[in-house]
Length: 232
Image (cartoon, rainbow, N blue to C red; front, side, top):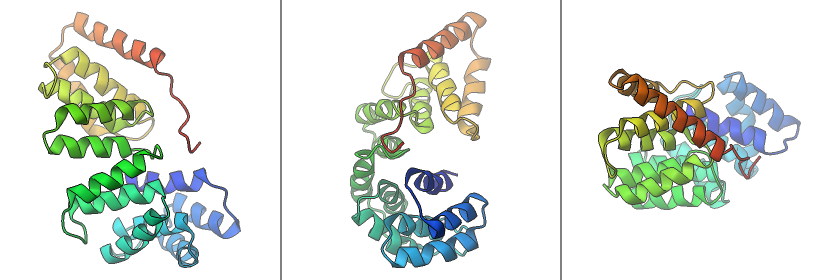
């Protein structure tokens, strides 16, 4: 789902000509084979947005067989041209060892570079990688930065930390607030992990605690109005 969102974000963030629009419409309709056929010539001509789209299609087997070598090729070309979405996706491949050896240091650098451009989900990517290294305080800083651009995973991880008492005191009210924000920030996308954890914590809270958490949820929204991404 996030890979699909990344391409759609690219599609809506830049002005396109006729061929690019046709490729974009095909992708939006989930006609990935046609999208690939249309994006590929553009990528070969050096368009970094098309290169990113082709790389994501190959990495996620969208309408074609998964091909990590092709994904790495095109994402690297786009990342070298400072496309944040390409840097984010390439970082995931290094983080997860997809077509390359696992390299968390390279992944972290790519995620941080993507975050410099306010690339959606890049702050959460940095934070989750630091969390996996048990650098919880540093991860929390990145998650909080991610909440400023309403990254669902940033809210989720803050909720998870409060729920589990990781780096902060265990606090069901705080967990409820952050998990509610994660569900809210995902708009119409499904975020079952956050929804399930929210249900679990709600079941063990008193009505007074739930009311308090809901007040904190609304207060956070009022204090942090959703700001436009710098790409918007």
